[in-house]
Length: 101
Image 1 (tube, rainbow, N blue to C red):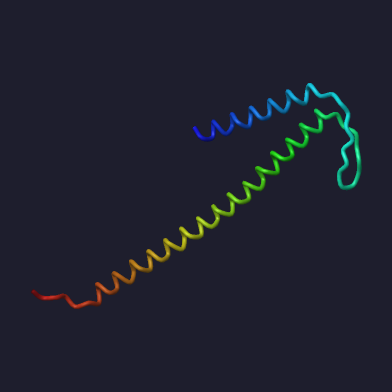
Image 2 (image 1 turned 180 degrees about the vertical axis):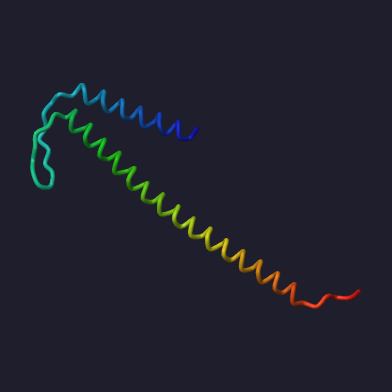
């Protein structure tokens, strides 16, 4: 449900940007680092929105991947510690003399 709402939010933002961009046929001068160009404002809006969206997903994906790798490492470490603890418990139980009551 959460992902559906997120998808709908992104879809609404995308539709609004396309609608606003389609109504603006004005040509603007856009200065970027190495050059300068004249673009229709609708094309510029769509390009910048798309590149920002992709950049945001890439950054979030990298953080998600990092967290998943840390989780996998922690789970492996926990499993090793549990096995070690279980081996030590069985070794102590086997070596301890039986108590007589």
